[in-house]
Each structure stands twice: as structure tokens, then as C-alpha cells.
Length: 461
Ligand SMILES: *[C@@H]1O[C@H](CO)[C@@H](O)[C@H](O)[C@H]1NC(C)=O
Ligand SMILES: *[C@@H]1O[C@H](CO)[C@@H](O)[C@H](O)[C@H]1NC(C)=O
Ligand SMILES: *[C@@H]1O[C@H](CO)[C@@H](O)[C@H](O)[C@H]1NC(C)=O
Ligand SMILES: *[C@@H]1O[C@H](CO)[C@@H](O)[C@H](O)[C@H]1NC(C)=O
Image (cartoon, rainbow, N blue to C red; front, side, top):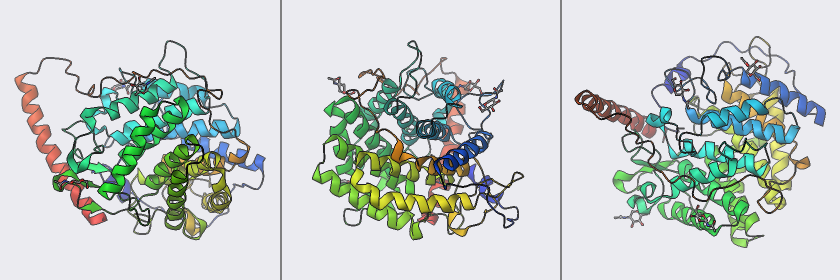
């Protein structure tokens, strides 16, 4: 996914706003049964954007990628994670079969979430989001797939191992993952906090689930690198978007997005929990959350400071609030001392979220500007997903702590999964003269669109 603005994403920005009429939201979070009812209705509304279970459609993905539809591949992975949490917290199994089918369809030929269809926009962060969804399925004991299908833990390990391979970690900027995976993709020269954040998050969780220190060693190393390169500000714990390798990551794009804070915060909570109360991780966690609450919850309501005020949030960005709500909630299970500080904020934020869900023909579609009290005229899968995540997460206090392999987990792993980090390079047929010419044209287009992306990035910074 991208904090870059991709050309296709612009269409969504331009096609904004029908008139917002002040209306009463039909939703309530006043009781457990209200919370479940609200979450169920918004989940249904969210799935109106999904057509992958209809004949002739592709299971697992939301319509896209642009220009074929609004959504990039990663957002499907994020949506299934939201629905796994939804099931875990509410007990509603309605979408479990749909979720199972969707995730299994996108695992790719090597069981590491690199399906050939998405090669042209495949980022480490995109692969990472699907990997975190598989990890969540293992931790929450989502039903295990049939024995002849890839298992949740093995899928998460597949993603981790491809990303830990030397092919993905070069010396530019002193280490770290690049944003994109195939060297020919626009954005390959960019290293960023979300790609490394997903890898860190998975490493911390795999360490806790399996007890294998290879994973926690990588998590520690990735944290240290983030500090050394300056993407994670060691004084105030701001996490910046990323930087280009061409000048050794010295010109940092300082835009802050809530999903970066959230993915690192949850990873830090897993490290804290795994290392039974480590002071180092406690301290890091507290600082991330202090910065996160201040930056992304002004007045106790979720806000996306790098795009919301100026109205430049892309389709990707308008899904970010759900992650910070869900991951901050889970964080309080792993580090319960954080609960008194965090849970009341998540509640006021969710109150605000449902209040603005008054849009569309049914008078209940959700927008993105939660702090205005009014529907902002623009809805979509991301806006609905945010509210599903926020509302269902209010039930976190009644939920069991995510399991490990030693505390009831049943998912089968494969430490050697993901042995083909470059499996996207899959020449199916011998290269012909025609293909070579085509490749040249693709390169020119790619260089063109990378310039566009970088221009946008510097405008945003
Ligand atoms: C696809 O799934 C949705 C949500 O469960 C359901 O409402 C719809 O009927 C399904 N469509 C088909 C063709 O199975
Ligand atoms: C890849 O794209 C083709 C053509 O749209 C589709 O039939 C196929 O199901 C897709 N595969 C995956 C894994 O998305
Ligand atoms: C590149 O950046 C890394 C991380 O900040 C640093 O450790 C390394 O010394 C830098 N290399 C050069 C050649 O400046
Ligand atoms: C620990 O994880 C690494 C990376 O996946 C793997 O290579 C190694 O075999 C694992 N060790 C054990 C004991 O499972």
C-alpha cells in the first residue's frame, strides 16, 4: 500500500462529496448487545464492496487494483484481518467461510502471499499485511484450513522468511527493507517505515508464538535500524514515512501516518509480552503510545494529521483508523498496564466514529472525518472497515489473550516456508524480441510514474 499517491488513487480524491445532510446515526455502543449489533451492520455494509465470491470474480480482493477498481491488493488482506478480529470479539461466525476462502485464494504458488497477479505493485508492506492476517488467524485460533492447504502459522513464516532473506536486505541506508519487492517497480528505491514495521511486527509475534529467537533477533535488529536511519525519532518517538536510497536515506519524508505508529506499537507490545516484562520494551511501548495518542487522537478522536485536514487522504489512507483502534486494543491484552490510559480514548473515538455514520441511501454509511460529527460525503470499504474495527474492539476486555504454540495454539508451522524470496520473477515462457521491447516500454512508464510519485511525496512532506 502506499503513502505515496499513485496515479490511480487520484480518481478517488477528485470524485468526492455529495452533500452531507445532518442526520441521526442509527448506531449505538451503549451496551454489549448494541456493540455487536452495530459491528454486524457495519460489517455487512463493508462487504457490499466485496464481490470476490461472485461468479467470474477473484476471491480475496476488493475491486482493483487501480484503474480496474479503487483498491490495491493489500487492502483485501487488511479486511480479512478485520473480519477475523470481528469474529473473535463478537462470536459471529457469519463471514468465517468467506474469510477462509478469500485468504486461501491469495496465498500464491509458494504459500507466502506473492501471487503473480500482483507483482507489478507488490510491496513488502502489502505482503506483510496478508502475513499479519495469517498470524492473527493462528493467534486467535481461527478455524485451521484443511490439512492439504497452507496453514496460518506456516503462511506467516513464509512471509517472514522471504523478507528476512539477503535478497531483501541490501546495505543502502545501513540495512532495512525497501518498499517494493521487484526491482523494476516504482518505489523500489524507497525504504519505508511501514514495510519494516510489518516485518518487525511479524518477527515479534512469531518469536512469541514459536519461541524461536531468530524472529526476535530480527525484530531487535529492525528496531535498531529504524533508530539509526532516523525513521524513528529517538527523542519523541515520531515515526516518519521513509526516504529514498539514492542519498542514503538522508532526506526523510517526515509525514506521519497512524498505521506506522500502530504497527510498531503492537510489535513492541508483543516483544514486551514475550520478554516477560522487559523494561526496555516497556519504555519503548510507553513512548510510542504517548506520541500516538497525542498525534493521532487529538481530543480523544482518531485523526490522520498528514492528510485529513487538507483533504488528501487516498483510498489506502482512509482505512488507517481501523488499524490503530484494533492494534491499540490488542496491545492492552499483551501489556495490560496500558489499558487505563488507552481504552477510554478508544471509546470516545468510537463514539465519534459511529455518530458520523449517516450517509448513503440507508442513512448509515460511514465517512472518514470522525471529529466533525457529520458524514463527510465519501464512503468506501476503508471507511466502513475502520468502524467495524473500532466498534468490535470495544469488546477486547472480554476476549482471551492471543495464544502461542505452548498456550493452546493449534496452527501448524513450517520454519522453512518462504524459501523463494524472488518467486515473483517467474518467466513462464522464453523471452522473445517482442517481450523485450515491451519491457523497455514498461521501464519508461515506470520511470515516468516514479517521478510522479516522488513529486507527490515532496508536496506531501
Ligand atoms: C457473497 O458473500 C456475501 C457476504 O457473506 C453474501 O451476502 C453474498 O450472498 C455472497 N454471494 C454469493 C454469490 O455467494
Ligand atoms: C489472477 O488474475 C486472473 C485474471 O483476472 C484471475 O482469473 C485469477 O483468479 C487471479 N488469481 C489470483 C490468485 O488472484
Ligand atoms: C548510510 O546510512 C546509514 C544509516 O544512517 C549509516 O550507518 C551509514 O554510515 C551511511 N553510509 C554512508 C556512506 O554515508
Ligand atoms: C527458527 O526460525 C528460522 C527462521 O525461520 C529457521 O530457519 C530455523 O530453522 C528455526 N529454528 C527452529 C529450531 O525451528
